[in-house]
Length: 325
Image 1 (cartoon, rainbow, N blue to C red):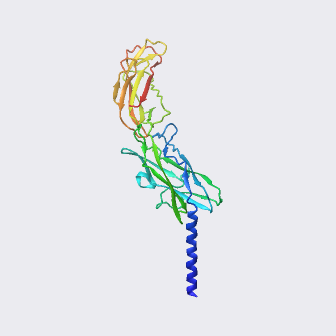
Image 2 (image 1 turned 180 degrees about the horizontal axis):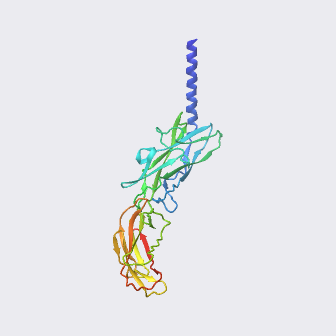
Image 3 (image 1 turned 180 degrees about the vertical axis):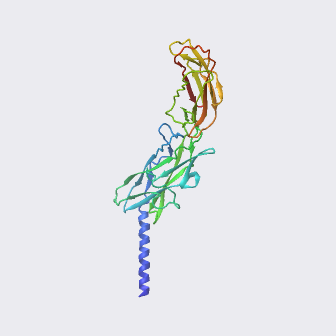
């Protein structure tokens, strides 16, 4: 009786394994279709804007084809780790610079898509073709990828890239029997866009792209009065600051233009002569700033006065312009 029991158990297990191999064999017509060879990141304007706090999820669409499905056909898809060798943290590189990015099963970043050997349940793209004898089937599939926001790297026309990532299609189940049936390679890439922003804030204030005007009020004018504010620059492409005075570096009486009061101005400790009325380069730097920007103290000082100036309001307007270095 014991010999018959073991023999029956052995035959049952053997039949199960053969059935699994047969099902996979009938899925060997599976293939990938319309997988893009290159994926270029797109932000709100252009490609990767290093100071933009928003994350722009990229959608990648492709198809899985089953020419003939004789039985129910399960399949799953993996992505290799890329140049980092670590699927949990894929990277785009450009020389010695890096941008962290990754690929996900859903737009909500439910799970990172991993390669065979490290992928767990839910960390692959899955699908199933029902048995439709003699009828080919196509399924639309997607995955998602994004670059971590606010990674500050220098602007350049040369794109960041990962080494080609391999997409692999398997017939079967990740946690059961499976067999590799197709592969494609994908290059992920992104250009770091040039970004140069200006902010004029109260002394010690925080950088804000919306704060681009500053009123310097001296109250009752007297020689030697000093007022300060901060000129802030945020850039990943170096910067050049120019200043231009509407009245040739003089406060001018609003109703009696011949009446003027001189003043001096310095930015970042550098005195600037605006007496010509032309735009004058005040500062330049080939630097990359953090998202908080670089702070340049700006001082305006009232010059010598005769003491017989006409009462009233005196004003000058200075135009501040920042551009890439």
